[in-house]
Image 1 (cartoon, rainbow, N blue to C red):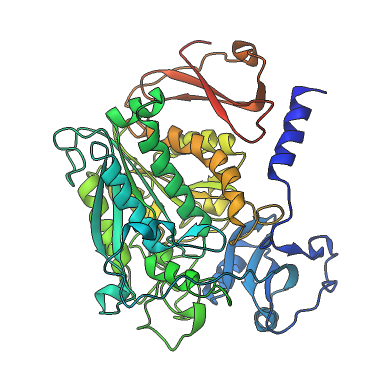
Image 2 (cartoon, rainbow, N blue to C red; image 1 turned 90 degrees about the vertical axis):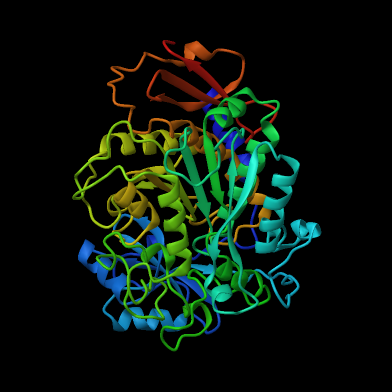
Length: 522
């Protein structure tokens, strides 16, 4: 048996197992054009519909009409989440809509409803739903504990209020971030002349994307628990500030966690001041509301649409609070039109985690136009995608155009190298919005090396102003050690030296990766 064959077998075993919340494929992907799907829709069920789109204009029409278009694309097919009435509306609007999968109904006991979310206790760190997913209060208790356990490394920051809290609703929350670095002098202060570069990670901007909050939780623990004994982590935190917002949309997450017996796949925030909407239709899509090409593509003006962009750009408190934080952390290094680059010596990286579709995305998302820093952004995206086994590209290249997103905003307004991860597959083992909690180990093994890579790139994401020249000729022979190796390597430049990285899975621990690096010539 070859190493590659053995690796594939181990990977399959590591990811195997039927999941309670995995979408059940109906087989319509193979249906001939014009045929009827083999599964009929029934009232009360939730479906993913496969919708063929011949042109980008048709994709934009689908989004403008307010359908819940998922971050998923296969060839010319997009996918829409909805019920039997959604299929009828799609067909009435002139779209083919066949059932691609049926979503099971996972159930969990909702966490205790509190009179107020103003205060927490240390025990809240153990509050979970759906088999282990931490609640908003658990995330915030976790931040408090990390800061208490590691006062030399971690600082918790309150950077704003959610819509509910700002409007007097006791169910609302503060907006929380944590800064992680080996603290000296002015570290973790909100000033643009900070001596250390900054890597910013956020998750659960779309509330139903529950995997992403777990990734942030584990990233925080990976750094703080690993500082004392891991030289790579120590080197990173000695030289870099890492900022994490584990829950970017706490009101929306509260809607998800409190409706376990009748799961509500809430995407938007909880703003009820626009339109006469109900259920998951309330709110504004925070990832369509930012003032970077707002309203130009991939969103709807209909208040009850899942991609409702809001009454005007930056209308939402959650986004204005994030933007205010970003402008205190990063200097403005980019001016002018879409093709104007940020200077080569710009520091900092911003990463927004979403799910699902196994993608790494980078600006621009609003249109199929390349940024002035496309080569560097594309190279970083390729490296991270190779580490995770994902696809990479601009959203219009591999998904669809969508304006008003967070990664477009931070690049547009500040010149920060910005990316989006779409974590997890669309279907199959551990697919969909609600994978069982046990799937998180596999996702974390994928995401962890890419997060470390991006964090280390924060000091010079655009190359530091110098031409690194040609990469060294690195090959597997440089890494013989009796281990079982991933069939791909990543060769990258961090602004000062070439780095070749191979990812190895020890034969007796399938799915658990260790990282081997060689700096300079192989």
